[in-house]
Image 1 (cartoon, rainbow, N blue to C red):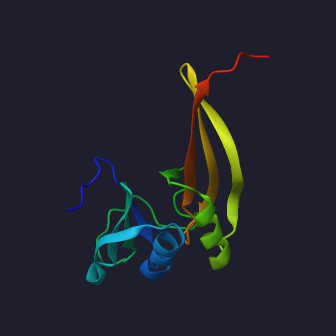
Image 2 (cartoon, rainbow, N blue to C red):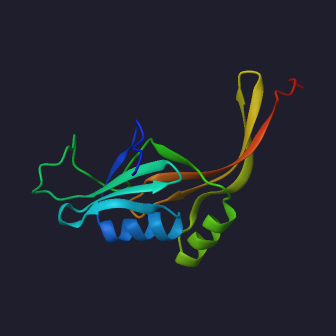
Length: 144
């Protein structure tokens, strides 16, 4: 039985099949369930979850303004993966360019820094997706 997270973003998409090809074939998500008659899919990747819903102007969907690409302006979705290398390879094979190249980044979190190997890619509708491989923690370095 699928354990649903307490926060699951639902992304409006223009074409569910293209979005599923990206999220499932490239990023590695699995379809937990879908309602094709509604243009809807619930996806999971080791507990990272997202819902995709195909835009339908006749469906009475919850929209606060007209949709225009790129969707999701001002948001990026960070998703933890075991390793980014395989995802990068699948994205390259599928022809998805990176929005931000892969690099190791350390972020301060109180008295430690948390490291992550990360890159950003846009999905077919323009949502920014940041894939992260955890590198561990280290003490905060003194200012130089």
